Image 1 (cartoon, rainbow over the protein chains, first blue to last red):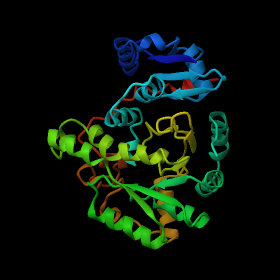
Image 2 (cartoon, helix red, strand yellow; image 1 turned 135 degrees about the vertical axis):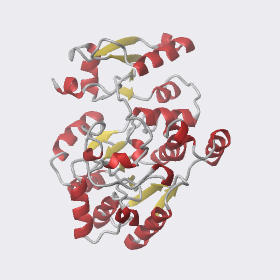
Image 3 (tube, rainbow over the protein chains, first blue to last red; image 1 turned 90 degrees about the vertical axis):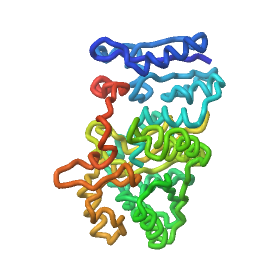
Length: 111
Length: 243
């Protein structure tokens, strides 16, 4: 299994806040050791590796994780807490996970 | 049957030009475990359309416990009109109890609505979607030109999918305007929420919904005390589309 983290750099050159938050959580928990590769999706460069991967996998937000399994299939995670629960085995509260989902897709509250 | 990611993107390109009815035809032909998410507002048109294709269409509705009485009555009216079961979903009692005990019943006016919506809507929605292979929403692009500008007709829903599985989300009304929705409602005698006759456009929970005046966008009728949410985590579509 290979895990790739894709982080975003904004058009002004700064890192996106959510990406920085996720990076900090991965580092403080030690889970960063399980990330095999980190790619940058640079808004200023549509050919940056992260942007290419986002296009290839039809991902429209960052950060996101790609888990490549031994059989070559790939799972994409756009919700950090879903990723750490399903891939890294971390226990999360349902409320925290729901909150992250909503923050990632703020139109859900219109349902 | 699941549609893989690549196919979803390709299918979206084709379905973008199709009518909502054709999108629903496609969705219902591809999936058995599929349900419509019904908010108790004008997305009732989806039920009307789907009911003509599959009379026993699955429908669910999120009862946050804070809806208008008119909305509860409307949900029941729709149930009777179409003779369908509507799976009314409730929030986890312990989670609501904890929120209310710690922050009161109107915490969303002090901080924001995210925590309350997460507990009252997203948690039960997540539980429901774990039982489905596909779901249908009434989301439209014109509801929010900023955040829904690139709303696909079909998409791979990675937020709510089961572990190691796919969940497909359909937005058949993505390319319809509010006017088209209301033309359909009037032309087909579709029942609608009485609140619409009193100036409500987008209808959600009672404390977070208000009627609007002329020329106000429907988003102004929801969470009006909050600043417009900044979206910085979306990858610029222009860049993604450039290849």
